[in-house]
Structures are given as C-alpha cells and as structure tokens.
Picture 1 (spheres, rainbow over the protein chains, first blue to last red):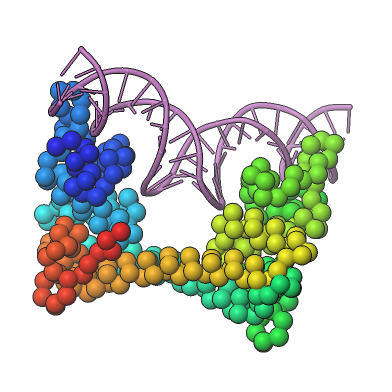
Picture 2: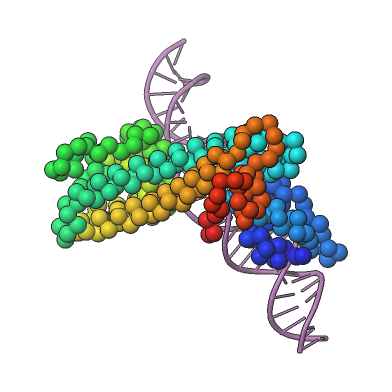
Length: 145
Length: 145
DNA sequence: CCTTGACCTTACCACGATAGGAAGGCCCAT
DNA sequence: ATGGGCCTTCCTATCGTGGTAAGGTCAAGG
C-alpha cells in the first residue's frame, strides 16, 4: 500500500513516516517503479507500535531502543522494564515541576482580588518574590532552578 | 552595565536577552558608542520579571501579555488573574496527560516480570493494545488522542 | 605603545517533533 | 486525454535555548 494508506492505518502521518525513515528510526520502505513508498501490513504494525510509544511519551530515541528490544528475540524483559520505569521517572519529574508551577500560581491567584483595581499579588510576586503576597502568611517561593 | 552583567544580575542569559529584544518582547537596549548594549537597573528588574514568569511556565507570548499589564497603570487585577488561571488550566491539562502516561506505564511495568526472559507485557501492549496484559484483568487503554 | 584576555557584536546552525507549502511527477477514472 | 488526488523531494516554520565563528572593544599590565 502507499504511504497515505499506511498513515491512515497506523495513525502516523505520512509526513512523520518519511521523517522516521529519514532519521533511521525505521528502515527505508520498498519502492514502486515510480518511486512510491510501499508498505506491508507488517510495516503498518510497526508504525502502530511507534505511535503507541509516542502516545506514552517516549522520545524517538526511546522508541529506537524499544524497537531494538522488540525485534530482539533474545531480549530480557528486565531491559524493557528498566526502560519503561526510567521513562516513568522522567514523566514524574516533569509532573512535579508543572505541579509546583500550578500550585504557586494558584496560591497567588487566590490572593488576587480579581477586580477592576490594578494592585495584584501575582504581578507583585513576579516583580519581587521577596515581598510576600499581601496578607495571608507564607512567602511563595519560586522554584529556584 | 553591559549585557553580561545584566545577564548575571537577572538570571537571563545574554543570548536570551538578545533574543527577547529581537522578538520585541523587550524594547531595544540603549547602545554605547561602540555598539554595546547598555542596561539600567530598571532593565534588569524587567528581565528578572521575565525570568520568574518563565519559571512559572509562561510562554513568551504569555509574558508579553503579563508585561503589558505590568506596565499598564490602569490595569485591572481581574485581567492578570484570568491570565494566571488560564495558564494554570493549561498546566493542569499537561499534568493530566503526563499522569495518564505514567500510570499506564507503571501498570504495565508492574505486570512485567523483569527477568531474563523475553516475554514482556509492555511490548505486548505496544504491539497490540487490544490484548490485555497477561492475567490481571482490565485492558489498559492508551489515550486515544 | 602593544599585547593579552575578557568581553561585546552579528550571523549563522543545531536540537526535537511536527506541520505546512511549492513544484513537479504519477495513477486512475471518466 | 484530462482532471483530481495521490505521491515525490526540498524548503520553511515552530519554540526556547545553546553553540560557534569571525570580528570589534576595552582595560590592565609589561
């Protein structure tokens, strides 16, 4: 089948399929006489694998490793598990960072009257975080990264 | 002061200061006779504001709006609050997505023996999510985005 | 005065993953 | 055989950041 059909069948855009081929994530597709890329059901199967891994937030490099293990009959599931858990750790770290941002902002927003006056603890914090956000106790520290 | 000092004082790299100027986030800096950018304490103050907004995850566009409000003496704190809460909503959405990925992967990893055998429910799920991960009931559905 | 080293300038290129478009060729159905 | 839809390659952009190279400037010290 042509690339368009493979794209539809796998959920990976034709654009990305070409990109994955170009960057060596997938082997070069077979070609028709006219130069069209030709894909088998097997290929679409692999593309679906890739898409699901992307959906789980794996980077292309991570997927490269996953594909390697997938194709390796002598793989050890421990290696897959290690890969997966390392990725989970990354995700959790990102989540923590975002969570910190969100709670900080929420706290500040809670202190903001949200009316037609200009004074606003959110701007005050951005301007000078050493000054606590008017009333209501604790200083909201920005992550000092 | 020169850009290097302003960078040190604000926590924004010289590179990014030039970038912010180029993209119009900040006004063009004054120049010395030799063409060096010159920054005042005021400027550094603004750069610190920008850096803190970045630390809270605001995009450059978001910061542009924040700066506009910051400089607007007739602003309404409601506008700032709206901006902040909209950003919080975005953050929470991202968090949810990452959380889904993490829990899915963790569940799969928990089903993986993690030994020297090749069979692995993580790979099985990536290969074909309609097949539940051996034993232990529910199908782990990948986010169908 | 001249050198040295630290700083500044502009102008590029790169990442990672994805999308868009242009220009041209191919294929199939009418 | 012509039109529309698919394909091809190549270029561009995104977003925020980092790097590098080639050159100008400045201050300190011999």
